[in-house]
Image 1: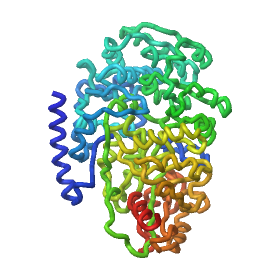
Image 2: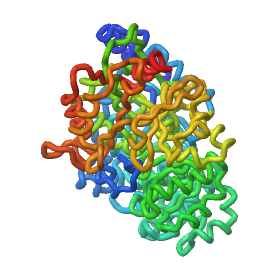
Image 3: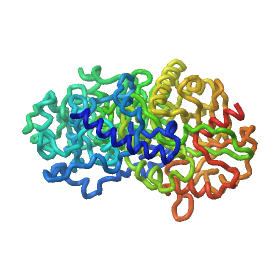
Image 4: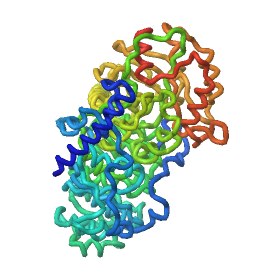
Length: 609
């Protein structure tokens, strides 16, 4: 039944594909595939961006309602063919079916049924549901999806590509809090751990860590009666326990050495589901001592990935600390549903934009400009308002000019339905590149040579699977062959874009050539309130720049700070970012050509390599 449903869905999708290919007249190259908020504005520590706090689907009033109030027995089932479907290629079924690949990120069981709910209102119930969601992703193929962020975009993809049934019921009953607990009881070991009902209490992070390795639901004094009524029995009372207790306990050695989670306590219980599924260390870190922070993560293997974000230590010190231990961070502090999303397997994906199209000949006497949006490595932004926000991918001007977009290499393994939706919605002028620096955010120049080489090899494999040709590296004074050469040496990486932490465009467009591949530093940046970041200044510089295609000076990489844009007619923090890009392009002379990253790199290599 499931397979037949998938085939029927695929037939419908293939019909749309034929129409799309005819419309674009490039069936062989425009691969539209349904396979797949910011934690930080990378570089120069800035105040936490309000856009990161935005989660866009549910209203504030709805978010306060209990999950039971949302799961009305008479609610109409969601239409899997509604918004969120896009065209896919003939290769998509094979790509979905083929699962013989190695992931460096934790992955759950692939769901056959997805129970869509609204998040409960109280912290205690949120925490319990998050732990239940993680355990469901670890043990069953009937899983939970919280309807927040972009979930209503990517949920239909779970059905149309993977054949997962979307429902709002569990065991034939509305998916209320009590019914969720009861519905999973017989499929889980049946224990629970008890912790404080206060988000910042150390026992909460201890409970998350222990729940993952003991397969336990998490409860607090506020809801333990409901948990026990559903048939769960107390395994451990962790109230009063802290990180020191955890490290000396029997559970410490059972935690994952390849993944960990670090969150501000204000973000609780986001990421709890994924940490429980992964059996990984979870910590609400609020310190500001780099040495102490580094000591906390010495137990991890080299190359391990930390999910979340650290507000108290700051971006630079956090990334520096991890980098010096050969670790990397996936900004994900606002992310929901990663446990469920991670289960959806896809061996490979192909982009649906025009980046792969080859030029037959070079235009004469033009300045070639490539514009790339920053912060695509922020997985939680991609899962929230990146896709729908008019500032970014949801801007109506998208498609009117060539644009480079960043995406995390983690997306194909942790959020394949979302990646599928993004690729399926690409315009011919859109192209995604890998952001940022590795399998997570890191400073590669601070890694040990052998660890960096191993990481670069794994990154190249992930990029190949994701259909990404180019990598963007952000480093701290790392523009040198010693560290960048490990990336250039990989067959799956055709070139590198480079931005500097202390100022994205501080290297003024310098280019390194490594193994015949260009490493192009940013020449310009759009960034409000930064010297050299204004639109008029950039336009004047570009309009006076070289037009000689044989000169490296005729090629410019411009990075766009995702949290700057047009507001009240001028460039300002938290304005409309894509409108700022459009405004800049309107000020450029006619012999400035804005191109995709692939066209930019291919043209540069042909003429200057």
